[in-house]
Length: 378
Image (cartoon, rainbow, N blue to C red; front, side, top):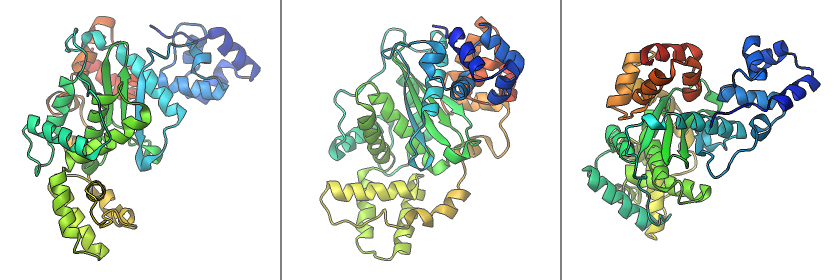
């Protein structure tokens, strides 16, 4: 259903607060013409601008657009750097992106009759998750001592009717999103805006974290879902056999610098963060009731700061250090990320007419990037 601004309330609120079209446009960061179209019912603000408009006028989503059905509302999960809690602005923007994604669903190359697979009774239990991840690795043909290949993981998403959307969110350095997960109950479709500015050694963990959400999003509540996703992702990228071997080495080590050497070696072997390795070793020891080795020791994070800054992003790995061209972005999205997103978007635009503003809202990108994509896809 197309959104429509609650014009009377928005106009009255703006007038009472002393906002002319020009002043409101300046505060929101758009042209006066855009505000005029919004308040005359000729257009609606894109997600980020709608959130900003609401904040300026002190109006929530329901006041801006009217009541919405919670049962059909896009459901979201958001993770930020340094485990920060997402703000309501983050959540509103993601929900709005979800509503826009829903418009693309008729063009997706997915089975129209079968809903995605869900786990029957997921448990945040070490043995259960270990068995599940062992079976998944076996199904994918990946041994327990091999790193999880990113293309294999991305291909698995497609089989679960989940669409990976490549985004570049490094401009939000203060609270950069690692990934978002948007599930549409009305279409039974999952969308995963995945930040290409995520560090490469974190990428596998976060891809697996989102995979866990695909399996459980409408099965577990939000808190349970996050706990399960963290445990699942850690175990899938660093299985128990690796945690056991690393634990056995650490039982003889007390010096922190030597501990770090062990963590770094296993991290390099499995292409994951040393922090992920440390967490999995400690989880293994606790689950198997072994003497703790404190792999995730005090001072581990500061010790990795320099290495973290030097680590490449997944975008740099896939596209090089320069800004990706549109053709390169489309090629990588289809062939490496195994995502039908841009082909689906192209089919939508060809049917409904080119629309850079729509693309800007979908990807939360700059208007210049949206215009370049529109030129290629429409």
